[in-house]
Image 1 (cartoon, one colour):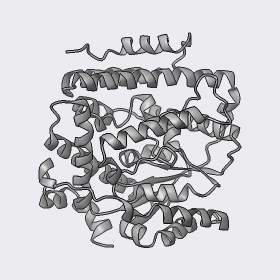
Image 2 (cartoon, helix red, strand yellow):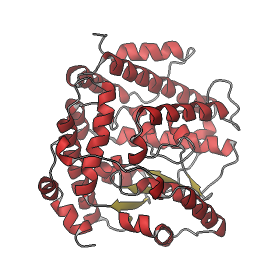
Image 3 (cartoon, helix red, strand yellow):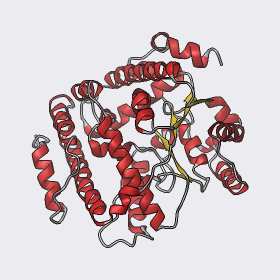
Length: 387
C-alpha cells in the first residue's frame, strides 16, 4: 500500500514545484484539506493508482493557489475587476444545463469559462497572455484521453476543451467542493454539510476576477458571467448572498430519469480511484444529496422567488431558441443579431441527437422508481407533475 495523503506533505510538494513562492492566500482551505485527506485515507478504499491521481491533483491545486496569489501581487489591478451579477444555471446533470450554458455562451456580451480555463486557470511560465495556446493544447489532449478511456462520458456530459463548462474545478481550490464525485467520503461530506462554505465562494469570486482579467488581456470584454453547476443547488442561499443580483435559471426533468444516470456516472468515476467501489453506495449517496439539494433550493425560492426562471428539459430539447428568448426576457438582456446567429450555428452543429444513448439500470445502484418518486415527491409535485 502506498503512503497516506498528508496535508503537510502535499503543501511541501507544492512549495517545491512553485519556484520559491510561499503565499497560499486565505488559509481557510487547510482545515478542509485535512478533513478531506482523513476521509479519503479512512473511507474511500483508494487504490494505489487512485491515491496517486488525487495526490497529483491536490498538489496541482495548491501550486495554482501559490501562482494565483503571485499574479495578484504582480498585478494588483486584478483585484479591481468587478464581477457583475452573473446568470447561474442550476439543475441535475442530464437536464439540459450544458446545452443552455453553451448556447448562451455564444453571446459575446457574456463571459464564459471554457473547460481549458477551468482545468488550467493559471498561465504557464513564460506564456504570452494574449495567446495561451499551450494550455489549450494540453487541455485538448486530456479531453481526448478521457473520452477514449470513458466513452460513455460523452453521453452524460459532452466534454470539449474549447466549450463552456462548470466552475466546479475552480471551487476545488478551496478544498470545499464536490470531492464525493471522485470517491466515497461520507466523513468529509458530513463535515462539509455542517460547515460555512463562504470561503469556497469567496475563492470562486477571486478566480473569476483572475480569469476575467486574463480575458481582457486577450481582448475579450463582456458584461456578465454565465455560470453553471449542480453543486449550487445545495448552497443556493449562500450563492445569492455571495453574488448579489444573480439570476438563476433552474432546469427541470423527472429525477426518476436523471438520478440513476447520475449514479451510473459517479460509479464510473469512483472506479477510477478505488478497486472496491460500491455502486449501491454511489446511488444512495447521490440520491440523498440531490434530494437535500432540491429541498434547500425550494425553501430559498419560497422566500425569494424573484431571481429564478424555470426551464423544462423537454422545452430545451424541442424548442431551444424559444427558451433562450425567454431567458433573455427574464434577465433583461438584449439578444443581438450577432449573438442569435452564433447560437443558431452552434445548435446546428451540436444537436443532442448526435449523442449516444446512456445505458444504465436504476436497480444496479440500489434505486427504484417507487423509491425515487417517494424521495423527490415534493419536487416532482411542484415542478414535474404540475408542468
